[in-house]
Length: 152
Image (cartoon, rainbow, N blue to C red; front, side):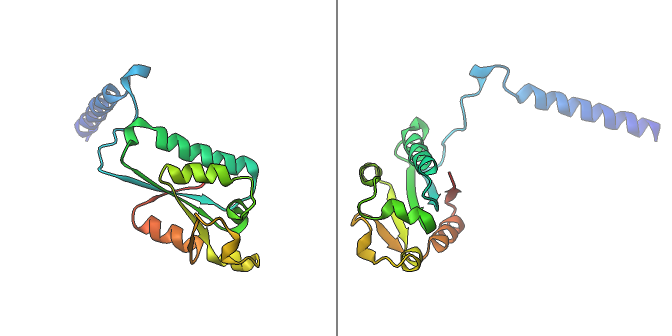
């Protein structure tokens, strides 16, 4: 029994030494994850009208699009629902930022349920924004399809 315990301790020590040797030794040893897949999909959830969170969502999307590892491999959707609907309504201060995202290939989607709950007609939102039956349904479907769900 004592010999078995000694062998087990030696095995654990050797294993932990091997693990430690694979960890980065300095900042320059690790440059981030390798983007070795053919494509990546992310859906950003916007369910607030808080300007700080909205700006954060736009900044996060732009940063992802600018990541050289993801160049030509990234598909992004921004889905608005609940209070996030305010961003997509015609006359909001976010029109130019939304157009910029659209020009970069981002899918812009608005929840129909939120429009109904707010008493808004579909023509109340920007013409370049698509309408989905429900924001949560969009997240569920995209998530089940392997899309990463990001809530800024």
